[in-house]
Length: 447
Image 1: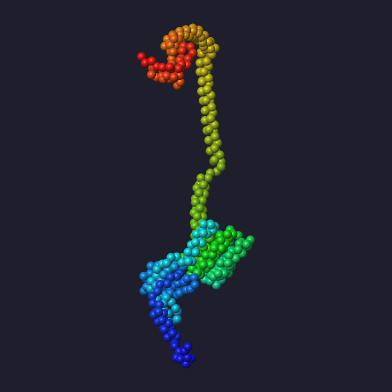
Image 2 (image 1 turned 120 degrees about the horizontal axis):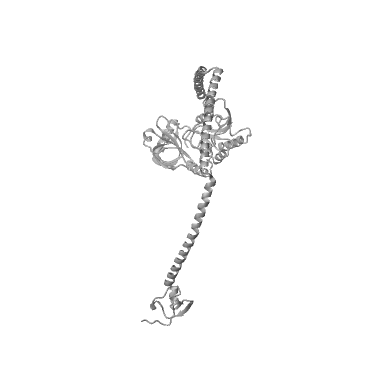
């Protein structure tokens, strides 16, 4: 133990000796951990924290080495870094001066995020896509009352559509208490009977931050609460590159709080300009219509005549039509009278009674010729039929059998023509002129 009167060291001397000791005793070493709080200032240097589940180590990657790093260096990535331990003497900061970086796989937080995202997607928690009222009558904003997000949202809404009613529901947006507070606020709002899903909407938002800062919005229970919300929900968490489970579970996602406000309400300036444009178009259309109708009125006025003139023209036309009709009727009557006289002359020259009597006489003569012809034809056909029957009888196999011959058949009905077609003991059938006999072959005689 040093004496109280020993000479004291300055702070800078202590930091210098500590730096020298670290650099001498450790030298270069490899360290593996998860990236967090990656910062890229304009200087070109890269600052980040390397951590595991029990500790953190601040790291610095200077510009002259950072340009050779191929790894993407994102929060949550797991990497292996090579460097040397040192102390930044002006502040006494203990840090690792990094020389090289190698990817070591996806960080634990991102791996957990992907597993939970896959499971919730399979359960349909990300299926919401309800349209939000545009613009909403009442916008309920769940965010920190002191954050930049609420200021951005209110500024955009005031500039674009100040008529919308906005209610801030103050909730923590970071830390362990954030997710339960958001879930409780969602439940409270959805129990309000005065809020209408067709006219009111919920906006969940906060500004950007590291993966750890935004982790509350990856809570499984919060995602389910958003999915089951009676009121439509828009999520705008972090910057454009930040994506959380709350974004997937919401009906609509906006990349930033300002973009969310722009999507929720129209721009009154654009509407006013459009209204001016439509008003100008309407005035031009009205002037054009009035001009066309005035021209049409002048044309009709030029064509207009006194009703007496129209009646006189109609009377003249009616008289002409009447004269034409009388002439047409008289001509038609004369034509029909001539046709009637012609038909009467034809009827007198050929009276129906005489024609009927002549037809009766022709029928009687035809009947007198038909009966003898039928009798002669019937006799001729009977004689021919008899000749054909005699010819058929002459060549009929039955006639041959009648003269004492027989036809032998086996059990399949096949005719036996040669003795070699039989076997001793075989049963045969003999077909006679009258009847059949069953025979048995005793032996064959081959002559």
